[in-house]
Image (cartoon, rainbow, N blue to C red; front, top):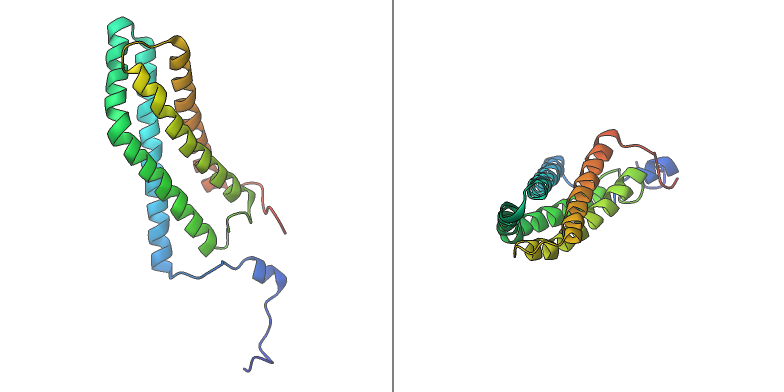
Length: 175
């Protein structure tokens, strides 16, 4: 067939095309990396929520020790791991969005996941300051509330993003 007689793609077919094509094996590898990094990030947040809850239930010196453990456990190794997982999750999500029919803002569930990922990254960075302050042993109640709010909000956002990935609700953002 020549280009003059080749059938043209319909507008619907053009709308479902990815920005670029990547080989199936590479796309699946990126998808596995995306899911694994999201799992790591979710696991880190679960540990953070558990430690905040344990510290909240303790009294006096025990509370300071739990928050010291959280600061030691979270500030250096987990913060780096969580930031790497968050950035990897965001980057692989963007690549998958651009290289698959889902797009970045073509479907509402993908756009919402993108926003949730960015917000969760910001919450992660905001979590750092109060945790280091609480680890000193002087834990004002408002800081404990703030840390608990940050940790549980991030966990809720990441869990909601996971649900969106499975159910893919709301349809197309633009036709």
